[in-house]
Image (tube, rainbow, N blue to C red; front, side, top):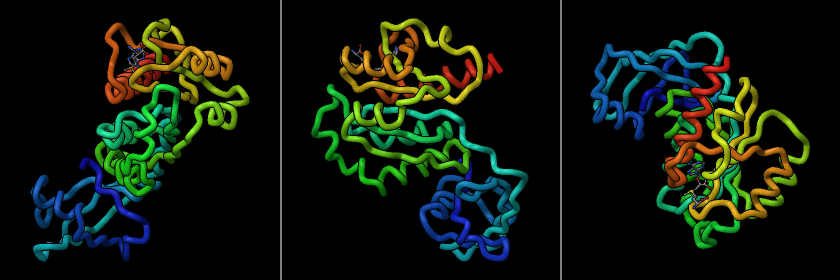
Length: 240
Ligand code: SAM
């Protein structure tokens, strides 16, 4: 946890009292003590510092000082074919740690239909994954996560009109650096373990998505998400 996140309603008179998993993490992983300061942030709001002013053995009391304006989310949206259940949570955490604006998880032709019944897709489980990711990435932004049972309907409903840059990761496509000329709102689509089928790629292209490669190695979905977001972030910094 690189940022202690709290709900605005938890703060009372500039003080925060925590006795849940966050306190457990502070105690057992970070080993914080009275007098120590840690980074803290209000969900969807500003970040700052929190000084430990009391520890009764189970609950910590922290004095919170928030700084400046809240940094916005990274203007990047992820369209993600539902990966194998074992990595759903981890993949959402990775994306949230990059402070992406939103994540549209979607069915696709090569998504094993049993994956869609995974308890890891329960809204509460996905919200917790997003929160863990934000704590890791030290961002106060929690992405909106929506699950779609039809890719074609998602593409029709959300991407009918052209806007910003749209990329679809596909191993045999031209390299991603060729597609990024400037910093602009970006949508990035990552396919299922078996890859996109031709008809899906054609529809994505018809909706303005440019196929891009992330390099020669063909990566599993969770690695492709991390790699794609890392490459996009670097290319945006280089073009800024
Ligand atoms: N055999 C599949 C194919 O050729 O599409 C491999 C699919 S890969 C395991 C899962 C998804 O990760 C792909 O659909 C793509 O979106 C993304 N991906 C993985 N490695 C990639 C790479 N080197 N370049 C672009 N996209 C990649």
